[in-house]
Figure 1: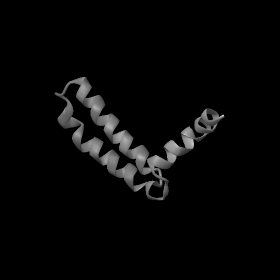
Figure 2: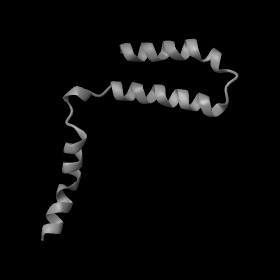
Figure 3: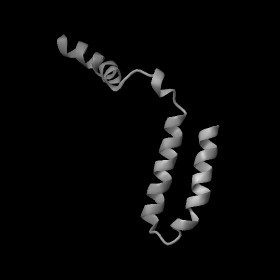
Figure 4: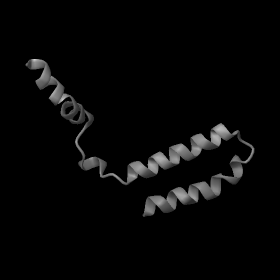
Length: 67
């Protein structure tokens, strides 16, 4: 909830300054803010790391290759 308010305030304060910027810069600005907002919704400190994700993803392939 708090992150949503902060992202909204950033957009409200920064968007008028970005009126002269190209459309590509505006899209990058919004994309980065929305990516940060989505990532803030996950409980990242409690999630397993990327190596565990890779191990889980490729485990069935490894078992298939051993046969």
